[in-house]
Length: 330
Image (cartoon, rainbow, N blue to C red; front, side):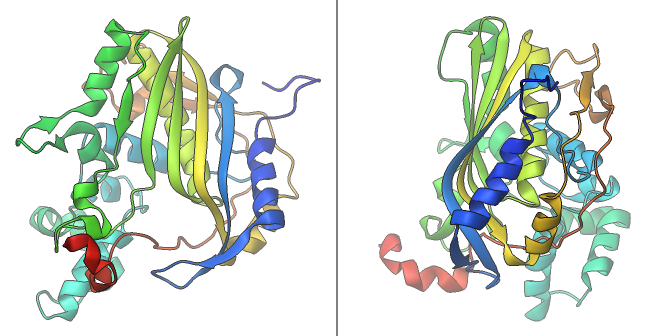
């Protein structure tokens, strides 16, 4: 928690917003054409003993963060779990795939609302159209090896931390070139972005810290989620592996503010941070397989009101762009 001589750690995030506004370069998202202001290469650090870094200068939806994190940790790839728990973060991507095929006459036309409702109530429809193959959960828990094996990176990392705490290789990667952009075979490239692509755990004394590299950072909407999600992951893995939480270190690549978020950012910068909340983990958390979201409780969260904004459905790869990268296919 903040002391008299210590600046509130949330000012790191607010300073980052100001940095982008003051020093950023104007760009456009290649898929949507949305304007954005961008800087490159920044870092935030949060000591998890000083409170849980869920931003207070706007209300951040904790329910969505926790269910999305569990979705990743449990290796799931179908959005039905998220839909059932009222988490809309990933709705746009399977709908985009469905809409493109419906436009070719392969399926009936549906609005996004109709599509998501069918995912919710129709198990067979969800199995057919709710999948996001190669999403984080699959890369974390079932990385497809060239010899046909499925590698559980997250379980391996936990085993390493428990048995070889001085080793330096407790690294998990979601960046799999076999399925990315023009590096993938035609028809196999992901149509959605993988942004937080690598994280590295380190044991120092009895404390576990995590360093995340995030290549693309939607600073107003996405980064607050990512900070809280990976801070929670660090605390959960520390609990399972038998350590105290140390630091969450967030290394950011292309750090940007979309232009339709500028007014909300300016409002957020007028607000003063409040004390960070506490994250309380149940003693029932003993291993990766028994973990459930209800074993984590957020306490003493008293943020400023929410600042609503539209998510830019950016990133990913469109096969129509492949010709621009034809040399990579030779």
